[in-house]
Length: 579
Image (cartoon, rainbow, N blue to C red; front, side, top):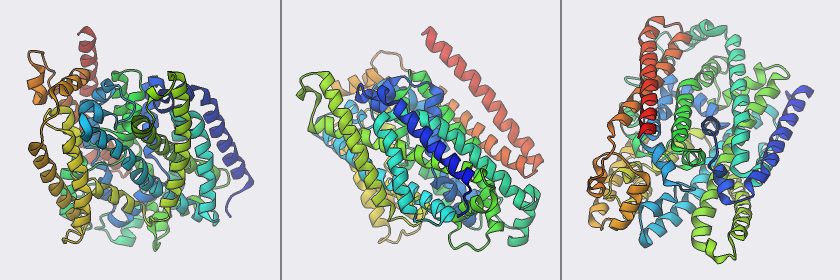
């Protein structure tokens, strides 16, 4: 076992501090489900934004990146980089709308936007579907990543350790709700990034720095290897069909946690929890900039070094954990261990709290025991907080069970992507087109599930073919159903329109003589933000590898749009205040 006494001390102190923070936040979460699930809508943008970033950095993430790079090099990361497009669409076209909706969960929007039995069924079904099977799958692959790390680092039975971690994480989630999640997320994110940077420096030192890394890759794979290619186009290991799916389909067609088309899930939950719609925009903007532009390189560089240090691993994903064990000295190993504990616990705490919000707010309160069945509001809220804590424990147990059924982290990613292919467009258009109805969403969900199951038997076996088939199949079904069914009641549509005030032509028939906002400013901001991320992400990479001639092209691509975007956002805020 590689741990020294100092490592155990560091890990123990960390666990005690996290539990202490969670218990400290307990009183803030007890007043109501609004406090338990949305922090009383009082989060500052920076805390909400950091919490989003922390949640997307799970123990599985560096391992998945390591496995991707072993198979396809840096360019393989476009399997998740492509979501930057939908991410910035969420920032500028949807964040304000989500906050204006004034709901507790994204599923609650369903009965704000639609009405009748179809809307009630959709809300209840989607709440249970996302909270249990889908959320359990996500918890499963996150847990698998942590299990691999524990197994490599300690040689102990990883599942016995994981059950202990789940119990500790559950303790502060059950006690403190979202306040405990976001506050611990803040500290956990800082620790996780420090640990990732520390391992990056030790791993580069092991192979002789960046120069030794590039030389080692050339020696092992030949001078024309693909591992340092940033672009997937014409990549020898990535099919062109896969590239086209990543760049042209996946980011708008697929539902994926943390990158839902139009926002949703725990991203929407953090938007609801902010103080106002402006802070919701800033929180989501910070999340996307940090997630795509600032954070990937420490993972990528360590992954590349493992190709040299551990050339013949049966499971390349474990290379990251092996580097931790073999390269870090006493104390630093404990630091990186708590970095991974932080990454694991921040994601699990969010997934469990988010899933519980569906079970309580959108199923139990809505269908089992509504608030008007209690003698007073105080009694109702105390009961619902108790139910939330019980549901939290249920979700933790379910996640542990599902974890046994995964073999690779990337496999979990692709499973979720294909399962929701084609439904994403409905989730975006429901905000901007009055004609979408509850049956549109029901049809999209059902068709996506059926299409993903039919794809393999029909000969669409590989990832790209499965995504294309399922997306086309789903889109045809939901559009057909939309026009074969009646639109929502005009009174319901008008209520929704006047509450969230969506821009663009899709609600013109309901706006009447009222002036409508243009979509053009939001679209321009989205394009500028994407340029900032691509320029920063690839500019940083070319700076690291000494490709200064390319850096000269990419630096202006990041700096000029960033300046312009900042100027535009300030002007838009000033205009809204004057209005």
